Length: 601
Ligand SMILES: Cc1cc2nc3c(=O)[nH]c(=O)nc-3n(C[C@H](O)[C@H](O)[C@H](O)COP(=O)(O)OP(=O)(O)OC[C@H]3O[C@@H](n4cnc5c(N)ncnc54)[C@H](O)[C@@H]3O)c2cc1C
Image (tube, rainbow, N blue to C red; front, side, top):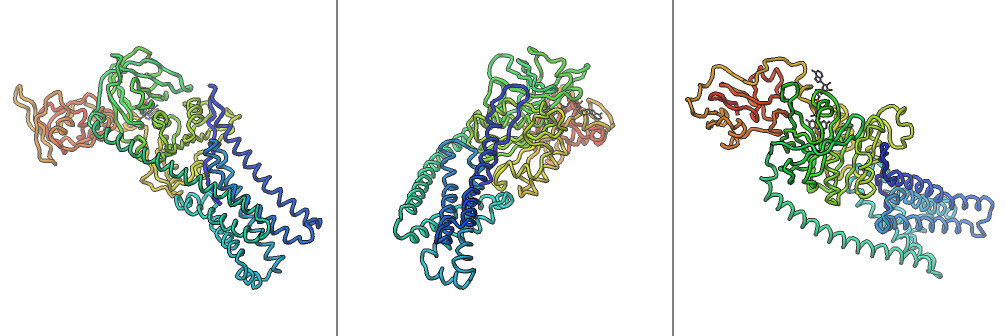
């Protein structure tokens, strides 16, 4: 019996915008089909029980019951083997949802077949049953089939599916052996009219042939894909230096879209009309800076558009505090903004694994959307699972687009759960409540399968969800997080000097008049000239000193370095808290030497 805990496509319930009903439809199909199978599977058992009670099973009633249950078991088991080919031929994903029920019925009928034989034919005598089995060859095969089904039945629960991971699939290949044994058992038993066992045999042969052909075609496609990937990786490697290059300059806001009541999308283009002046990988972010009340303020925003769309970048911004409110209220189509990109190590390009699990909370959907847009644009063949938690139905950002993509791409699975109270979303038929272990298990099959779990959302949600995944057996290292930290919030409450000039005394000396200053990297024991147009990070890179960095815009704080002596100036220092400044930390990506300086790098 092949029982798969395949994830039903949970519905993406769109906000008011019209969206394809396919997702919700597929859930309804699955639910209906499951109930239908449950009822249909019970009917023969009920009829048999009624006939047995009224004595209508004929003279040889025990034999009739044994044969009927055996035949039913074989029918149900054969049906489970037909599910995968049928699904692939028809594209009906809901079929996967009923396979387990069919398989379990197969097991139950075979168990009943044996129980009737043991109880009524052998008078519940273990000795007589065993000697009969030893004596009759057809019973060897029947017993083998029965024994093979025990591990299959024991491992048919959701828990076992995720615990065994890939081994589960391997184990459940035993269904084929069980069915072969069942067919031989039937064939040897009937002696005279072998038509029915032969029909099963032919059907089984056809299924095996299908598997062989399909396996061969899949292998060929996989080989072609691997070749393609290698070629792409080689190409990417050749372009690596260019791709990673951090660009900063101006982009023009071409369009602004309202996504929800408090989220707007800003589409930005190259002011010259050409392609974007930088490349990024799905999940990375950009930095924007704007003059607000006479001060330049910077913030990071995930690039929500796909890297395949080289004519524009989009960011989707939730109205929150200083910067986002300013963006929503004061930035209009046609305005230009200062941007630096790309930055960030939270990304998924598709070649890393065959599956990606995306977990988003609220506006944390943006990196997930970038990944989904990019992978669907490229017709990626792996599986995408998006688990999206939002407060109310009206807060579902990108609802219509997700529904449309889900309708087109069978490998995109979306589950949305509403965490707010039901008042605003009474007609919601999807999941409710916070992301739970049950929801994860129901939605994502085989949690042991390789591939990252990418999470972005409120910190508490990410902590709790990480713990659930780890509890379900996903290695902690496979769970990646992106935190939408605001520099203003991070610095809140801290105090300290607030200079754009950082100075630590005693100074390392003024540079000679007209000469560039010198920077000394204390740990690396290296010194270099530091021209006034170069940041300390750029000088370090030129002379091979490693300083970690990410956004290169003074926002993320990755390049914080201690200024041992001397004076530097910094255009932006958002990532420095008062405590950092009091300790003499500077941002290497922003700091320019105003005197000879020594830094702790
Ligand atoms: C890598 C990265 C990617 C991001 N991507 C996105 C994205 O795609 N979309 C998006 O909307 N956002 C994103 N963000 C968040 C974004 O950068 C901003 O942090 C966010 O827009 C809030 O900035 P703000 O200036 O509007 O609010 P801020 O003024 O910075 O305030 C942020 C929050 O802190 C609170 N706060 C501010 N000052 C204080 C204080 N002194 N004391 C107590 N609380 C305070 C505010 O009430 C507010 O709730 C991302 C962040 C990072 C780091």
